[in-house]
Amino acid sequence: MPNAVLLNNVAHKDLKVINRYGAEFGDNLNSVLTFPTEFADMQREYPILLRKNDKTGEFQTHAVLGFEAGENLYLNNDNWGASYVPAIVARGPFLIGFQEKEMDGELQRETVIHVDMDNPRVSQSEGEPVFLEHGGNSPYLEKVVKTLNAIHEGLGYGKVMYEALADLELIEPVNLEIQITPEAQYNLTGYYAINEDKLRDLDAANLEKLNKMGFLEGVYLLKSSLSNIKSLVERKRAAL
Image 1 (cartoon, rainbow, N blue to C red):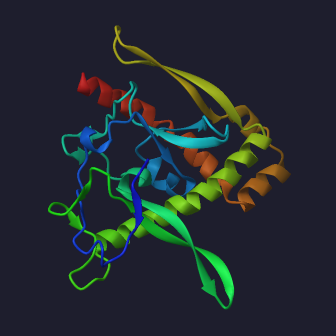
Image 2 (cartoon, rainbow, N blue to C red):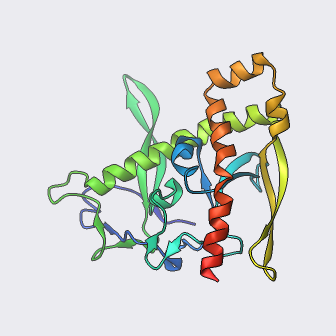
């Protein structure tokens, strides 16, 4: 469990975050959670597929980073070998939390930022400063705030979107057989993708409904992202 504490510019005035990548920071994952709020950026470089949450059974979207357990083909020494880093990685040791605040005599729930003090990226001597010398947010923290907001909005938006797609039977299981070399073949199981036949056969009313809800664009971004499987295969061949 993360050792998450409320971030503040007094207790954490000297806090820094190591802004590089590697297995020592937990980046050696073959897939990461991604959100509709970042699909436009993600689909340019990563294959995106759906999976069911092991605990809730709800659909989520994952960017595929490798073909084996612990394999991230986007790791390149200390760098991330893509122009866009997934939000769940770019957030670093920070998490969104909630606290109640009294406003006009009523308790209201507001979002706050927590930091996992046990995260290996947390440092007092190396990395990006979280706060400026006189207590203001650093440019790095401002960027993290935007990333956390995208995750928060994407979680809620994605839940409604995937439920709508499932109701229209637009999600189907896929089993991807990836041939890297004659000796190396990988089967990606447990994933789901957009059912192109069902999408093609949707009537005008449901197409309009998806479009008005903003989901239709996400559907086509998911579809287009699968062209990145080819580039992921090339990354694997280069690694071999």
